Image (cartoon, rainbow, N blue to C red):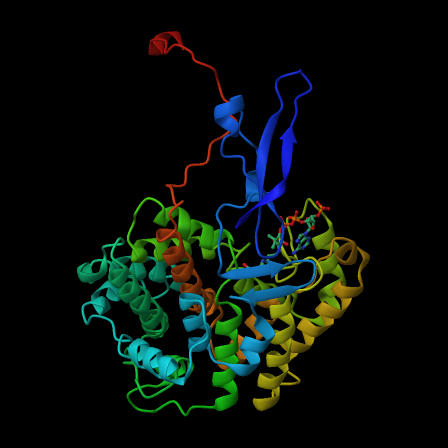
Length: 433
Ligand code: CMC
């Protein structure tokens, strides 16, 4: 970040002394006004619920231009990464800042694949859950529990420990997600197979049984890999900010990622793909779309068109475009082009894209509108969709956490507030209240 020659001046209508504030420039994107001295100089805070105009950190990992519909990981457009590489290449890039050469990639793939097994005792944690527990609650618990197995990598001030924890998290997430699924359907856990690719191994752990091997289908594995690439990182979104905030206190990385998973679970964030599919199932048929759209427009109904809208992308979500392509590929591979749910989704998409309510509010389909349909076609149950998102986003969370820990400006996160409660008052004896 560099200092801008331009300065901001904050003036007050009551004649108080104006305050000059520095402005910093990034490599691309909006400049920022540094308000760190504001409270000391004026006794005032800024007010920005939902962080609509606040940069909470500086970061060199992911850049989004919401107006252009652009998403870059370390400067590389998501479209190129999705077309030319696999998920582990994107992981290496997000973690290390550069794409790997062949030798670096081979070593990274080898290292990740050698950390895929979880401690055998982890299965006892699973057995403590009800079979119908939501997989996200299982993941919040089991990922947090990983910290109790890896005391050898919890010193966050040791770069080597941070590295090992990062690899463990990336490698073990698919194993835990697949275990959550297997537990829910009462099938035996399936151990990872190191010779398979990251995504093929996940499909193997999900769909093999001791009686029958999963036969790798390249189209389906590539679709899963693309879902993972597209969800790998997304700048300072709610769950990433949660991970950073949790990590700012010095908490260990497993605890921080568990906090990120908890945040991702919400329907306005990672829970949207599950909510989008449930919405389609609820609408049921193309004939019911007009009534549903009427409810969405009625502010008192509380009904939203799930999988539409985004805080940052206001023209289109570049991930949605790629996911839409994958959606067609997968449905063609599986002969599901006439699947009623897919037809319903396409009819809903068409109506919403033409409807004045959605057009004026710039509400376009986001990645989750299509990723739910793809995951359903892959055989992944709806309740696990957000778990797949968590598996993908773990690399983003880990990369952002590592970046934060090594930032010399890093401080514990501590927002302030505008207090609107009671002023000081006296506690009366109970009989006088
Ligand atoms: N359906 C109907 N109306 C909507 C929707 C929607 N999905 N999203 C926004 N609006 C309306 C909203 O009611 C408001 O209308 P008005 O101006 O008349 O009051 C206007 O559009 C602006 O919305 P907002 O709530 O100020 O926008 P936001 O930036 O705070 O919210 C969002 C963004 C993603 C939370 C929201 O669009 C939403 O809830 N979408 C559905 C959930 C979803 O698909 N989330 C996944 C996001 S992509 C995955 C990820 O990156 O996590």
